[in-house]
Length: 281
Image 1 (spheres, rainbow, N blue to C red):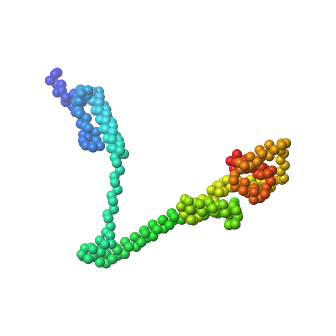
Image 2: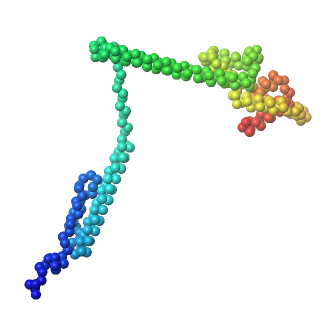
Image 3: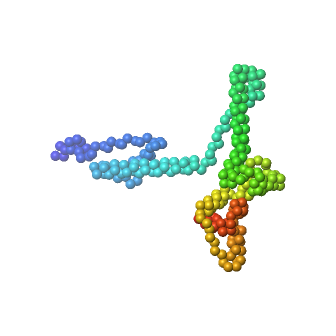
């Protein structure tokens, strides 16, 4: 009977599995995982279906782990390169090539290094550009000089709206402003122009905001009715009122004197002014 049995490993009676087909190798290099070594430590052995399947699973897992490790290393390398780029000093811009001057162009034309026609056109273009640049520079300088003059004139125009008496050279208040102007020119060397005039007006009349508040007070008082002020017996009440009025702005006191307001009217105006100031108007 033994002689009739087929030889071990034959197609008719063998139980051995067919030989495994090796998986295609992954080429080594950038962008690819390192090859997984066969028969490495921990790789299952044997030829049974279960052992073969376990070996394939093992090799697949090893390949995935190798791919993950490669990605981790690539990410670390890219992060390092990005950090180095951020920390690196900025590269200096390449300077434009220096253009020949007119003198250099003429010299090159004389030696024959530069065609006469080309050189003449270049010199004409360069001359035009230099002329335009010079005019633009002059314009900016003039604009810078005129800006404070325009600002001062605008300021004086606003003062004239509030204090039109400044147009009258014979008005006593205008004369005071002119004396201040002369002092600024004579004693402090300020220029004899509209800037010094604006400064003299501001020193005597105060800021525009302050004058606008005073004008608002005067308008409110002018629209009101007569004022009745009770004073205590004796002279203490009058002295107290005069002391209070003396704290009023100088420009307001000058207006009172010019308008000939009574003490009661002055006190009423001062009360309105103080109330507006307290309200931040």
